[in-house]
Image (cartoon, rainbow, N blue to C red; front, top):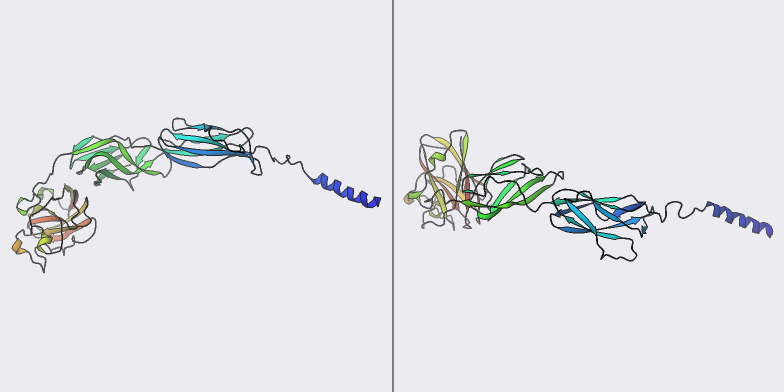
Amino acid sequence: MRTRISGALAILAALAACKKDPTADGVGTPDRVILDFATLTLTQGDSANVTAQVVDVRMTPLEQPITFTSCDGAAATVAIDPTFQPVPATRVRAKIRAVGGGAPCIIAASTGARPDSVIVIVLPLTFNGALSSSSAAVGSTLTISSTASLKFDTSSVNVTFGGGSTPPILSKTPNQLQVLVPFSDPGPITIAGIAVTYVTGLVATLPTSVSFTATGSDPFPGANAWNTAPDITSRVPASGQSSLVLATGAASNAAGICPEDRFAFGPTGSCSMFKFVLSAPANVSFTTDWDGGSTDVDLLICSDSTAASYNTSTFAPCALDGLGGASSSKPEVAGGVTYPAGTYWFVAQDYSGGGVRNYYIKIEKQ
């Protein structure tokens, strides 16, 4: 009996010797701090809460004091939230406030533990690059300059003026845009495709910090009738070149004036007519984009303005290009064939009737 008892005691003693102290492998000892976010994106003036906890090697939360610091107080500040009182007290909450543009870090630390951090991407409220002027005439060129931290992504940048006018960008580099001034509402200009330099690959859309006002009146009055159609012959470029014309849609036309009315194409809105003269045969094309309420604009080039000359079967005298510009494309293209010497009218018609605020007409001559 004694032998058996002694053997059992020996086995128990051996097992006890193999067991380790539960604190010997770091259990219950601070190992690292864990934040609930790795990155945050905030707009200047916004704030967000983050929580942190201290854990041991087995990821067991510990009741341990935690401090928070910002590595760039000019971009983001941080403060512990005293109203957050979890039970047990194994978590600490802090409020991060975005102050200025940048990508600072917020560090959470605790004695004896490895700290953790969250990157805070702070986007500015506005684009504060300089405009060449706070007001400019319709049809003129506006220059927009970048800043040290906000550049232009030339592959995606576009510009929208007040009221939704989106004119063509005449030239663009990472540091500067030159934009055609459209008919538009006063207000900030919205720029999409802004490259935020302090975060690789980040592209933002921001309004300008200053308001812009387009001035001037319709540069082509009389475009709503054949006999008063403005003459744009001087805008037809030399061979191999192009020019840009900006016009606004006509408010209304007399009945039976617009070509598509004469061809009985169905319900149509107003049209704008522009006269040009070719002194010699030429291949001329008109590529036209637009903004406003219209969802469909048709383009025609007509060689006669007399109503009696219009044929509803052949669509003469406007079909030399096969009515290529009377589709549902945006932008539309008319011309692209060789026209004999003579007088012509380029006509842009608001087929859907939604209204056109700006026609952006690119004229090319082969």
